[in-house]
Length: 314
Image (cartoon, rainbow, N blue to C red):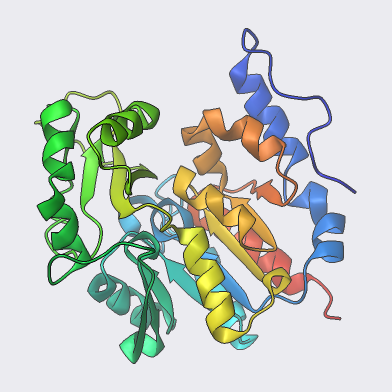
């Protein structure tokens, strides 16, 4: 069964909400079990985003999208550990924040700052992933700040873009911002001013509301060296550990996570990710190995883990 779109993109003048519902149904996990069985090997690694994906509201592992207490994600995680499936956390967070989260969840490997650092065994080994960027300072973070690209963005988008404090204060690689901007416009601006070696990456909607921003929605953004991303980190990890791509999957909720589809056997977008990014419906609909969970946040994440663990081994 080929899960690619059967009717083409939505009519621009049509009902986007109806199209999103149609895509969610056509690309649901339940509707594509045959494809998953035929195209995946027994899962060895699940690359997973945290906020809005594995975690519920305000980063709580024990709350669902409606703020109700739940143990479903925890049970799924324990089952994955029992089967020796590596739950590799992939996040925009700094590695020190991820270390504590990983330790509490029983995970030992994680990817920090949107793909720039791969950390193994809670920090015993760190593999850098910064592309062709040449360091001019002691860290990637200070190299980017010194270039002047951050000043350009803040000067160009007053009241629309700012540092995501206090989470932006402890960084080694990627400046972390919040706000709402047109990424295509931003990248044209950066290219015009000679900063085409960097990319501003959308890492999803955040609940944070800032009194100094004048935006209708707040999103998290990372400024990364061009070519550095979560999917490239996954490929680097597979090469580093000798893991076949069909034995890996990824779960996420943001534009930055959708890129995983080119690096893993299958990518699963939790339903809230599609609802928050309805413009991605056409891309999801036309990408053969991308699927949408029925559940939101941690429920959707647990749905993926439960489905993968229930698949028969070769």
